[in-house]
Length: 115
Length: 110
Image (cartoon, rainbow over all chains, first blue to last red):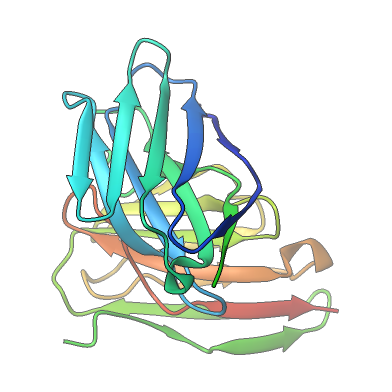
């Protein structure tokens, strides 16, 4: 099956700095890589995703990059704000293809943005 | 639309008891899944369904049963609760790759 490793487990930055979270995956057939944000006591919510035929995707202050050869992908948050503080999870889809909804998640990164 | 709903929000069980966690979605999504979340381990897939009448096992299926008789509902049954099943359980639905999670059920087994 798929295995996803996520680093770092905790990340502390000053407001306005950039934050980068990295994930590696094991299954070369995986073709979909989402990132979820989870605030304390809330459900995970999708913030950005990327497919294997794309190298980079941006949405305002958030970007994701994918290196298929090295089997790793990263989340980049620029100009961080206190409301970015949360737990971030990366994930990879099981087995590629049309196995919709079957994700393997990383262990999570606790991001703290200090004002 | 209510999206994905789960009941109960909190539950305490004694070892050996059984119960059913309810999940419903009103978005007409074909795909539904159950995940459990434990500290430091992310979310792990328990069971999965691609449509009414069709279910499949995920990473950690032991001790859990599911069935999918309708598109809307996907209950998760704990047959004989164990302390190792203490966790937060999230139901999710999707029509493609993007998952929509429910609010979660926090389960404690003593």
